Amino acid sequence: MKLRWIPAGIVFAMWSTLFLAACSKGSGSDYGSGSSSGGNNPPPAAANTVNISNMKFSIGSLTVSSGTTVTWINDDDMAHTVTADDNSFNSGSLKKGDSYKHTFSGAGTYPYHCTFHPTMKANVVVSY
Image (cartoon, rainbow, N blue to C red; front, side, top):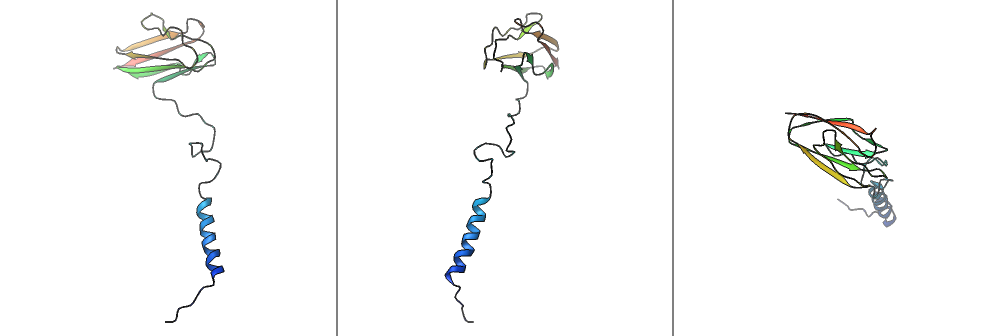
């Protein structure tokens, strides 16, 4: 069997094509975004987390099991509270970025509000 030599120009063209094809994969607009969707979507909320934003609680009625810890995060530009209607828990004043956690140990419905803004109301329903 006789070996044939392939001209250097053809070899260079083949390798260049393969190199460019490999480099082009994954170099779209998602670079550095930490997301494969390419959008500006916020990360999903953590389970049992209520965000405070635009003068409201993000979840009007949250149902959890007994022993669950619920976290409230103030994403608003003003201070808010998380205060049980029966005063069984109270966050005190939460500035933007502050959070408050409360563990619910007994079954029942726990309505709460913001003492600074009485129209802000929600509740946590705890089941066994």
